[in-house]
Length: 229
Ligand code: APR
Image (tube, rainbow, N blue to C red; front, side):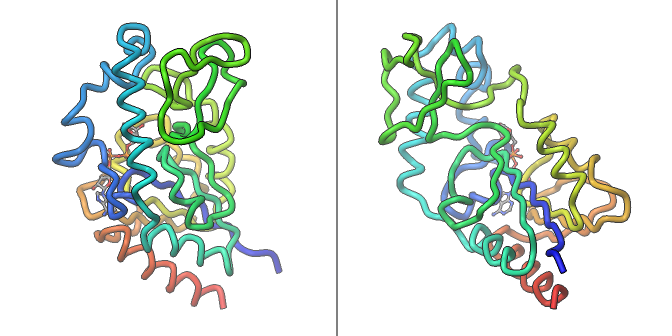
């Protein structure tokens, strides 16, 4: 018999216990930085040095952190389920833990791309993107990140995956940012939805597990693995 499909939507909270700041919690990144100054196409036009530095710092931090029990639990879930992760995170902690199917809705910190041809995407060596590093067509390389005000090219794929779920998990996202927050609307009626988050996240018709990802996820995964037997 083919495995049931578990689709997992993750946000910054799944990486919080690895030491990566979330965005909107108290002390989060958007308290320290102004979104419009570092995470928009206009910011890139206005102050390229600041934007490059902001993402260089994030990328540097990525080399100093490790996956946590939430990331590893989702890998274990693959023993008995067809697990598809849709992450809003730009870190690579799901991949480093060993998850096999990860879709990055908002881009990837370790990649950079041409600023004139979005199809020219490169792995960056090390953490530092330098001003004047160019793509093969001669344009400045930019972070491979979906900025506020830009389209989210992988949303149709993520919607299709969400609609194919037999079980849906949402972990560590405030569900404040669309279109990602709307993906749950593609889940078929009657499909169980679990939401793991210690904060006040509002989503209708979900089984709320008010815990941190690092403890809530391994527990839920154990339950789901038992159910699959
Ligand atoms: N475990 C689980 N959840 C946690 C933990 C934890 N240890 N710590 C915090 N959280 C929860 C918070 O309660 C909150 O609901 O993680 C969520 C983080 O929300 P945001 O900071 O808004 O992050 P996210 O939802 O991923 O943001 C979406 O916004 O700025 C953009 O592009 C960026 O991908 C990001 C998008």
